[in-house]
Length: 107
Image (cartoon, rainbow, N blue to C red; front, side, top):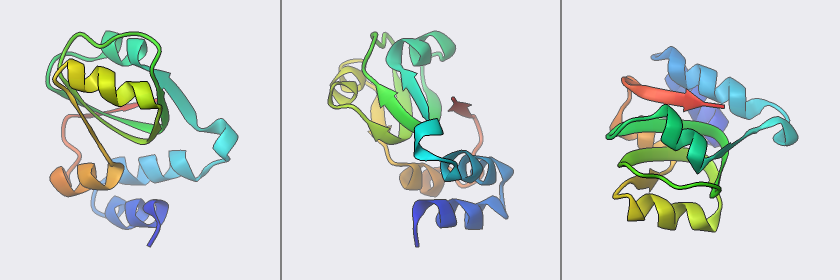
């Protein structure tokens, strides 16, 4: 089962996962690209963020954040770990937090 199908299945239980599946199911060229500086500005310590697309390494992160994304550039993981945050897959996020509580979707 692919990621989008998995999210649609989980979306029958929680609408956040159905919305994420819809965001990912569009054209690849229309998927989100979010820089670390945007994540840094829109979050606070201990937040959990999911990006329906790619996280880019432009900017810095000055607080601990958990980021789940479809794809990330190489420098992102280093910068997130330096800020004591963590990078997880979208599937891991759904398994850790099936209700999707306190998850921020960024586009």
